[in-house]
Length: 286
DNA sequence: TTGTGTTTTATTGCCTCC
DNA sequence: GGAGGCAATAAAACACAA
Image (cartoon, rainbow, N blue to C red; front, side, top):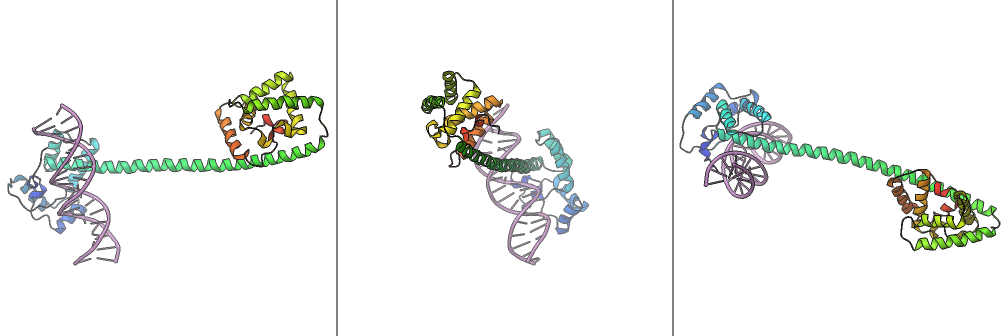
């Protein structure tokens, strides 16, 4: 790699770096004074071979502006452009190269800061959205809880009104219990639905009739049915929900996932009683 | 005036490309 | 192996508060 001694650069060739007032002029007036610039030029033209005191020299505003404009056009420096710029600005090509290098480093730092700001804004927006959805979710869960409690109360009232059950209900009860046992031993997602279909085929009844049977059993024989509250497996519950979805025209995984989530957060508690003992429970709309 | 933090210019060492 | 780029760093220049 090419290495330069300190005496190679223009700035290092300048003894007696401009006095204070000259330095301030650099900032305030956009360049060195004519006298000082002439001195610089004279040093530029001289070929000082000997090592002299090492002082850094800041570029004039005019030089910096020209370099900035050139940088805007292209942040990489071809050799021809470097030499041309150096000649135009009265600088060493090496100085121009160093200036571009440092400028690229500054640009990169700024770019990283900008990228960080954009990412942070995205993150904040996403977090706000998440928090909002979480609040919504809590409100909906609360509503669901209330509805469930209301259903429990309604069931309790209807239970009292039923005095006895018919012989056909006893038969259906035993059949459904068999079906439930089979369901418990089956991990498939459609196990509950299959049981339901089996029951239908055995029973030979229509949907409404089956619902009626469920209703009958839930009302009159809760303990033997096992379709109420905690005695029902989560799979069965899921399947009833899926059945409900398919009937009510709700498609896709989102609904199913939502039901699963609600099932976990709500149906595992003591409060989840007799939810499916209600006639229209499987077709409940959310 | 001085201490301190920031900016700018320049150097060094390493890496990649031709 | 030379040229050039980059990251890390030094050091001078500069800004500013106390």
